[in-house]
Structure formats: C-alpha cells, structure tokens
Length: 106
Image 1: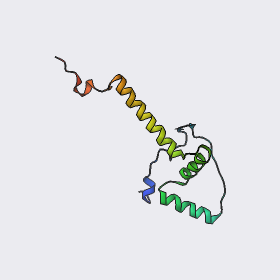
Image 2: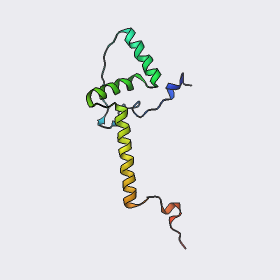
Image 3: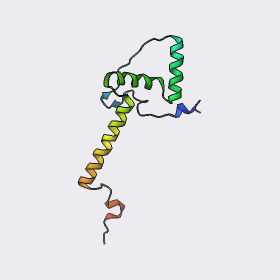
Image 4: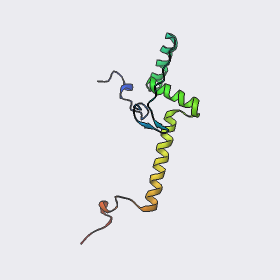
C-alpha cells in the first residue's frame, strides 16, 4: 500500500533509468551534496509539486542546459509524435477501418 498519493505518481520521466528520453538513453548519474536545511526544503518542494527528487534534479539540469525542463521536452516529443501519426493517418487512411466495419463482405 502506498504511503501517500505521490507514491502512485507515474510520470514518464520518473522511470527514466535505461529508457530513451527525447535526446537519447538516460544512463548517466549526477550526484551532489547539500546542507540539511536545503535538503529538507528541496524535499518539501518536490512533495508540493508531486514529483520525486530525481525528477526535480533532472528537470533542473535540462532547464539549465537546454532551456527546457526534461518533462517539458518529453511532452513536446509526445505531442510531435501524435501530430506525426495524425498526419500519416490523414495521408494513408486509418489502419483499423476494415476491422471496424468499413467494408462488408458477401
């Protein structure tokens, strides 16, 4: 049983170990040390936003390097992929049309 609602949070970026992100496989660890007060405040901020600490750190790194958070980049990639699929469907038609009663035999 989850201890709180955040334990059920399943953001695509949260489970990034070994998974390809918008810029490739996520397999490099980044580690640092902070003081206790900052750590406590950081964990509170993560909890209030409903994200885990690794997701928050990843977002910070991507924001600093690319000007966009990791989660924003993932959402943009998903949106781009959906638009690409929609354009292909318009171009070549729906793949499931026959199974949905589009053609009748007999």
